[in-house]
Image (tube, rainbow, N blue to C red; front, side, top):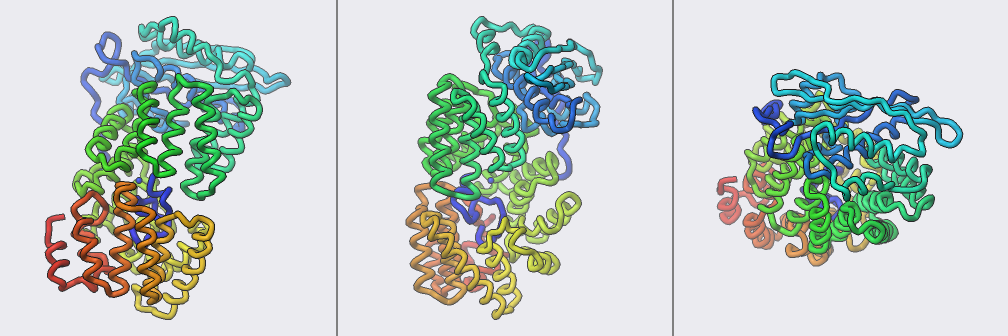
Length: 576
């Protein structure tokens, strides 16, 4: 939405960011007939992060071991394996296995302990995996347990043997081809594998530069390491979404192509390509690539989430919702799926459903600022400012106050939150001085402090001009720059820049970003006093999926100049 600083929303400041989006805790349903031995469907299973019994600096190795076992089991048609995004939430958990199984909606849990004893030549690895069956009654039975002790050079064989033992214990037979696939080594270089695992850890914590450097090291050590190329690509695509550069885009494309060329029968390269094309706003080509990935990995929740976003970007809303619901069924504790679904429901103006899904997301992770943002939007979309503020107050138990000010537009803050935002420095805005100045200026404007508002709008103008010289095609930066000019009273320039942004990102190019730019144009026309032009854009905008709604318009002070206009009153009088 307009006027948001660091908020991770569909109409955010950078086009690349756009490409990305129950009362109380909803306890998941424990199926009376979960997929266990003898059931006709696939067996539902979760591989929890293996416990590292070595030095803390080898944590990444233990996580990598569980990831590899999980990936091998997920490739078998006899299993429905919970994705790592949900399983990893249980690292070092103290919850009873019965509770973990209930929350993940599985009957089987694979747990383990890992110790890597480093020495010259790599050292030795000791792994003690265990397969536990948790019956609906809560009774736990150990199905299989076996200690393994091997040299580090045998780590890939060890991973395959553990996965095979788990499958055999649950009467899931491997075909000859699956045996061959299990035996394949992702790389012949242990040093490259070590670098890859360090990249995985950094990626999970969104340390893009560190992750990219680690993956670069992996592919330098082994240029044939297809999985590392795929993950190098996705890292640069994710990094580009926050800091777009031509070099980053080029690396993302080249690395994805290399991954596909090296391993055309694996899904990861096609998924990386899909991410790249989504980043470049070529969603049609992205959908082609993600459908290739889906054919190779039909139960991969990451693939399904990427597909749901691409379908949404193309305006195929119901298909996007269907894919997200499928991903939710496969992995009910995926915070990414819950966020995506909340965003889609908000855009469709299905606000009660969005509220329920947003509450579910926050129950999964009360500290997730993006989930909180989308949940707040569900209240604002209905014109419920008090409800939005109540959600934020409740979240204050888990999220520090300085972060909470980014989950609503500036006008929705209460006085205390506004004052808090004014105390924050540029570092709290990822050192983006344009957004920092914009947020301060807006608060001063809403407070009627014209002098301080103008001072900060002038600073924002200069900062946006610098950003646009480096990335002139960033439509959302240009649209926000146009809004800054409108606040400064530079009418002709504001309209010209706003319309340039609309030409870069028309409605037909992106089903979320296109309407987002139109929303900025509506605000710009209101700010410069062109109310009829604003209404001409506003009326059709309310007929298509987007975050704009009659309820939002009723409470957003930006549109106060339209109050009393018969056309506007008819629009906001509609049911939200």
